[in-house]
Length: 246
Length: 209
Image 1 (spheres, each protein chain N blue to C red):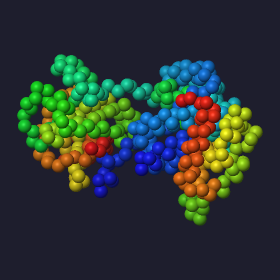
Image 2 (cartoon, helix red, strand yellow):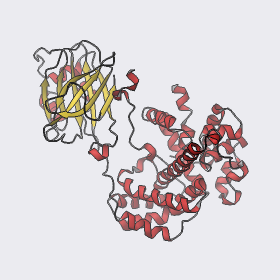
Image 3 (cartoon, rainbow over the protein chains, first blue to last red):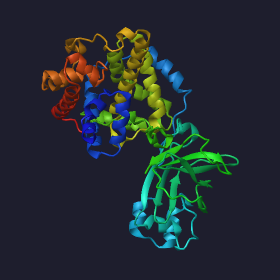
Image 4 (tube, one colour):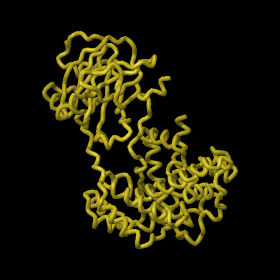
């Protein structure tokens, strides 16, 4: 399958894939440097094929285009990710003050799964990140129209330690969820059921709180985030904005 | 079960239709275009007008080639430039020249247009649903007179099958599966010929990303 995907690079560069394959290849492209390089070279080559058929549009087109441009808003630029690099953090084991500075820009929510014992580690976030069994899950933006929601620059990661029964969610670029609303994290169990994993509200981009949750013994196979009333919902009612699989 | 749950939904990646790349031999005009693009990103309409002058022929050429109908092609060309304007703040010069970026947007738009129209026709007329359009004969897919010498040399370096597959996919706007039907070859072969043909063409043209 993976091998098959490599061979789609040429067809991708020529827009010769159907929608489904295109999506599959684009997901692959994000992870495969070799294919990304190859596609880059192909797209430059394709530019030459385009040159070969250049023909100017009628002059009238420009005037109507410029009139339309004057009334069309541009997308905002992509702001460089400020998400804390978890791997880097784990490696360098920064002293606490420096660590706090490092997280300052990030939304950090500590989530206790299984009715959590009181925190014992001096830095509960670090305890989860450093756990031997810590699993990092990137949540992708899956909202239908992220730009519309102001979430197109948002990034979220869940790091979860089965042994500790806790997860840390690190994120950035979240917008205010609205009056009396909060983000709610969900996990998807392997039996297909969905359970709440905690509420969080970014406050000027910063948050650091501990949530007590219903005991949960299974292993999450997926995670999702919706916006819910700030009292929490039993099941997701809002659009799934972020999702990732374990 | 799990795979229909929204949490498992595949991320609708942000428009990676905008990942093109490409340095070209005309590095100077490429640099100028990059500079214009930076100004366009800041909302400079005069810069956009200048960028349009640089790119209009190549963008419209691609669109017209794929769509063929001049009136529709003009419509799509206008859409493409509006898209270039809108997305300029997200343009990343490290991923390719403005020309390659714009051409990729243009080709994608043109292909989307012909495919959605084809899908609509197919819905109206189920009888024809499975047959790709009666196809430009390969020889017509790209008339020699349109080719620059440089690209002609590049295409000449390909095998017949590689050349036909690339021309049908790029200029014809066909999927590789349609290319396979048109050339009466296996889908896997079409996929492979497109890829190794592009590799050869890339090496022949000395294109660097």
